[in-house]
Image (cartoon, rainbow, N blue to C red; front, side, top):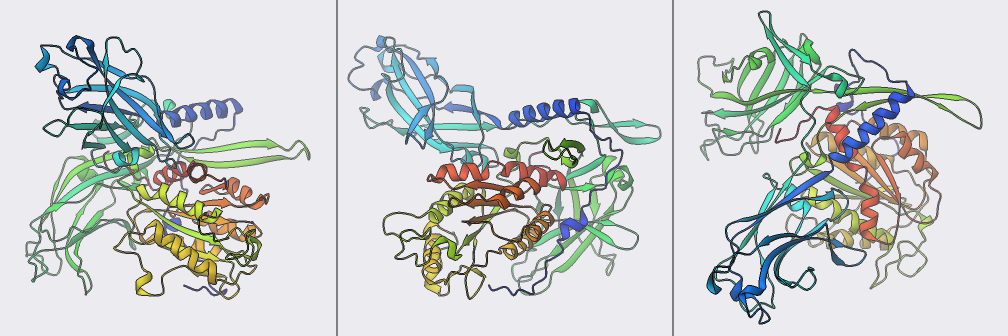
Amino acid sequence: MEYSNAESFPTFKRQVEHDDRMTNVKLINDPEQLRLRKERDLKEADRLLHFKLQFSITPIKIWKLLPEKYTDPEELGYASILFQEFDFKKNEYVNVGTSTEARVMIKGKKNIKLHGDIKFQKAVGLVFEMGAAQQMRVVLLAKSNEEEDDESATNIAHYDFRISDLLNTEARAIRKELIFSKTLKRRPKHNKYITIRLDTPAPKPHCLARDTSYEGTHIVLRDMNKFGEVEAKQLSVTMKIMVRDLPIMNRLTKNTNSYFQVFKDGVKFKQKLYQSEILSDKISGNFNTFSFGIEGERSLDKPMLIEVWHRNTLMKSEFIGIMRTDLYDLRSGKVDFQLVNPDVPTEYRGTVKVLKYEERIWITEKVIQKCLNKKTGVIKTVENVIYKNDFSIMNYLGHYPVCMSFAVDFTASNGVKPVSNANSFHYLSGDQLNPYQKSLIGLRNSLKPWSNQTEMKMYGFGGVKNSIFEMKASKLYDKPVGHTVTQAHMLKMYKKFAKSVDMGFDNEFVRIITDVAKISERVLSYHVLVVILDGDKFDYKRTCDVIKRTQRCGMSILFVGIGGEPFKNLLRLQQDCRNVTFTRYVDNEQQVSRNAMYKLPVHMLEFFAIHKIVPENY
């Protein structure tokens, strides 16, 4: 993909559809209120990052499995379970907290076993880090009455897992077979399983209540002083619907590929609020939970339209039917609606049933703070609008996918001739990886557990012939095997272009940002653009203006600076733009990922709050 210099920047749709209109806004400008609010927010953010792990193990007869040193049944006193986390600096597992023990029931030599499903329930005390691998291990130990510490105990079995494995499941739980130690006499006759469940932190209590009287149902706020000094009455509606008995639209498969769109019916035009996924080859079925925002009480009586369509593979989508309602009907408990096609009003087109309906209030704070410059004596007024999100990022991950793209700096300041120049940051050695390769691998591996994308875009900038280009396969055999973007393919594309690109001096990467912003507009996912560069000599004002226009598009930009440059422009971008994070390169793949992604959950939570997106399970 090549870009011309005359290309104009797009007007992003989400920015136009969602503005900053707020009602009943009270400003915070008292320093003491600011301090208390900051302390409260930090404490709440810390709570939302803590989680609990619960374990349960199927019964195991352990006497015949133990080594020869256990000759007397009376010596075996405890079964212990230990929780460990892999430390990449030490390259070994380290204990987290203390072990949890359970007394072994002794009823004769043949019946020594762990009776029942012994549940080891304990708050592990870990903090979720999106940029860290968080590789865990659960170890089952056997201890005699004389063995007091875990180091001298016998390792019976273990199981390795990652926190992302749990968050990517709908139930937030996994059930896997235990891996038994090779030092045991024998393996159990039947498979033994461990069940691990992750309990995410609960959101704040719902601050929305209904007051029903003879005049109807009204929305009221309860204990608003607990939820912040500033309020904006912005509601979100969370729904889950199912369709039944749709007409057969595909005559070959005798099924229907249905999806629906939600509109708010206005006087002159209708505003699109949501479009669902496709329910393939079914005339009846449930759609995923969805949510959309409304502007307070004034939108409750506005008509809401749900249109159901059939997605054709080769032709345009075909209209099935439409239902008309409003939020007052849904509040009153009406759940069954009939689809109608105005062209054939007497024909039966199926029904829609509302399985879930919930309303939630989102708090928006507008903070005005005065800052004194000690050198010049000028008082500067800083105004920030803070969108509050009461959910944890763990509630969203696994249900709301993350897409990733990469951009690599190929300007001449990196050092030309990467094949032979050992001083170049792009130096291609046979056995060692250069800083660009390590950054690509580290961030790709950290983002991959949260991504389900089948294609990943890689860009380059700074070339002589093309200042911006897309790094993609030019031949069929260069493409990755299957539909997964592998680490090997990513490194192969990087090496191919590092050897062939003529390095120039144009460091403008802003058109890459606009291209990724267009992609994030089209897909229902959050997009992360990783830009790896060795300098920041670019048009700051132009770049900052474009990035600020992408803040509502569901996009974060992570900059990784390589080399000893001061990177003053990137540090300014991090302060002026909410969806930007900058970190310097360090010779550790895990550390680069943790430093670059530590603010990514904050960016995502603010985006979800702006668009009033409620997690799937709430």
